[in-house]
Image (cartoon, rainbow, N blue to C red; front, side):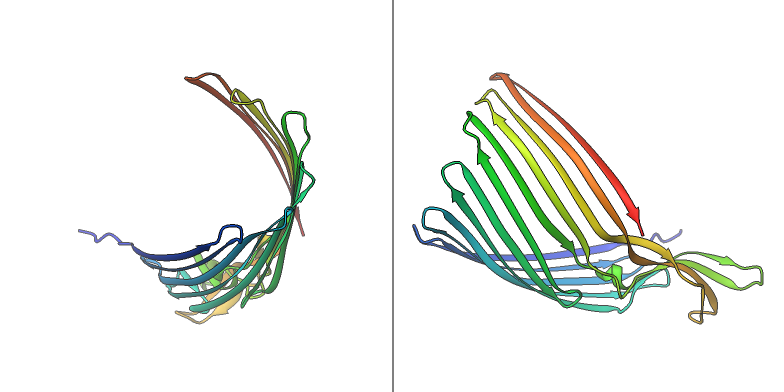
Length: 287
């Protein structure tokens, strides 16, 4: 009988939270969690641990300001014991992430609310990063109708795979009898991917009978991942062979536009109709 490969995965998760609330004086929340994931299969053994501490404070200041502020510290460790077909370089990766955020929702009169906020991160892989956001909502006063808009910036920091993965897809032999391998490698100089998006929408609520939501959005991605060919090289381990491969690069930008419409209608207590439409266009712009 042929012994089938076995894959084992174990997950450990622990969360603790403490909250203190004082009437009229805001709320303080402290949260901590720990996770550990272990995977053992035919290609590799990987162990990932995360320890995190979060602090958040929420308070109303005067009649017009609703403020949320906080920060977090995270320690992440990732180790692997790979194989010839799949591995990470280096085998052990440590990441330290510190962040702080501040958000203020401001009441402008009785019908307009404006929210400004930003998150500042620092990690051991990509350094400093700022992710601001701004939102506004307006009750236009014609029944239950609202108009809103939003603009935000989001970042994706490189993962361990982006920086140091090695995957061997297939083997071949060239015309001179030299063995070779097709593969993919990570890029230690891989950069942070960026996304800037603007949204706008309209909502009308016809009471308990019906409602309608309309949303339009436009975004721009910068530095998305591509696979770029690299020059063949001769490798000596585990035996002399030619490596023909690709490497991760940040050579793709993309524009996105879209529109969504969602409607609800309840003609009776036992009958509800929901309808929606989503349109999405992606325009890639390779470098």
